[in-house]
Length: 437
Image 1 (cartoon, rainbow, N blue to C red):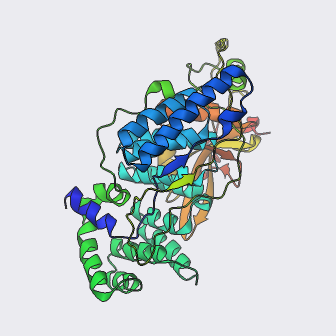
Image 2: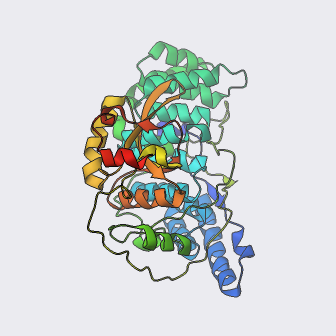
Image 3: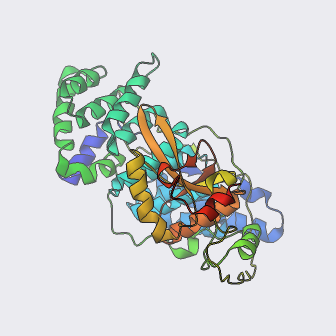
């Protein structure tokens, strides 16, 4: 199925609402402390306004240029990072978009729209495992209808159907939710249920036409293009986000790294920032009568972080190299701290163990205690894999940033029901177990 046909399908389907939209620029630039900072803020605001205008006009190449300027001027503003991710996504630069959405979440862990867009970009790049982990981490911040369809597109079709059926049972359910459920049924090969559900909001002839379109859409050879087509984007070759835009450490975090890092190579550390309790921004709801494009453009407010830290230059003094690599002070037991670094969410304990055996030697995690916790997310069961023992979020971010710098995936969160993994209960080195006392 050609890409143009997929785009035509998306334009007639109430699937995923507007994920890429024009953004209202951050208001922080007007509240900076000194003249130099205010000047920088004005540069960022001007660039962000230009990026917003370009995105509304669907001129994404121009939007990317202006959004990069805004982020370079105010690198710790989550609103500008989110805008940059949306510009990359509109331009089809999926690798860069994934980085920008991930960095937005580093700055603002409760940003539901960034989490949803991150999961969709991961699906579009064929990384369903990472997408499922992202959805598991942020399920309570993502709109239920969008979460259900994203779950189905990521490969957990049964879980997606269960989530969407729960939404549709609500008397307040809208046409988009019903059409999302219909498509999930189609992905599962339940064509009778798909037709009945789709027909609730369509004329009989239109419902028939939609099922015919979906029969082509769900073919296995169309899988790589599904999400991109529903988002209305055309993926292009992407070398990734410019390194000059990577998150830099704040002065506080840089000092912590210099004092606490054992023998780690220099890496950029993202500092912990205040969490803003904002409502999850779900996809825009399409009308049952106006089959709006799945990737429609509207202007919305994207919240920014509550505090912007002006870039500062600080010389980081390397910590003295230690001769003993494994020691009671360097070992980490999960229950000895308040924060963990989550490495992924998997189908069961066995898959979690296999993942640990791959990532532990790759990222130097043998001195950390692997932990599991169970999570049931709208009918789907996950086993989370994490390492812990961190008293501060900044310390956990330090490890997660190192993992990301080496090509891995991770996420920092608070200690929940995490317990030492079953497979290390008897075989864990004594010095590590002592660290938890």
